[in-house]
Length: 330
Image (cartoon, rainbow, N blue to C red):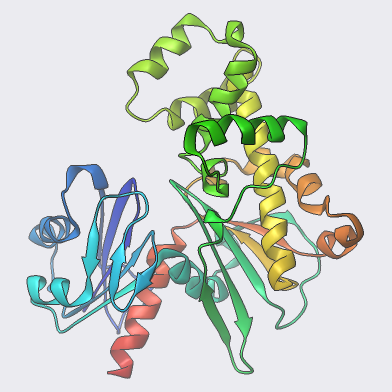
């Protein structure tokens, strides 16, 4: 039996799967808040204490680079090591993989009901595929055809320098440079980045923020859910939240196209992570594709690139797929 895990800055998702049932049949699944634990092992121990079944191996995907079996999470103060987890949990085998590598592993196996179309396009058979996943942070990956199957490739593209595409975004860059010194795409194109956009929009028009909303933001441990909910449900009354979300969508469209151009993703672009499934109407209203195709001479090429939102937790599915593959390989 395999323990599959998806470890993010906000949530820990764990599941048990078997070779017989396959990666899609979770025998037991549970989610925890990352902030409730000082490390991964205590969270896994809490999970196994209530689970029926004992795993012999584990595949854990994490939001951060994995080098030589060691990972330091980007948005969580944890360091993980395959050998330490294997010994501490009494398992035969532990694999740590980047969460975007896990999502990329899942992409070729996704079913139509697990996808929502943003742009139909026309996929090129065996063309490269791009994956952009804004959640707590911003993850990026791609898949290339190796002659027999798709090979997932990880990246830390979400930490590349943010490039503004209009005057508002240029002001946003200057505003955040003063705050962070260096501004990567993750600072403006993720759950943790949405409040940064909001802060800049508010700095231009402080009077438009209501007293009630200001008080709610000051009390909130995490401002992102409040801003997101206000932008989606109170667009007409909360101008700042709505504007922040519109800018976020524009930046997501532009950066998704950047990755598509860099890897020539004629096989499609997949939007995964925690935010896109919550923003399907906003992604389908045309703004995303206008930003996606605003690439001058390459607009025509990008208009033909299929774009879909992944509506399931593809990271956990990908960890299960990869873990079972490794178990079969011995």
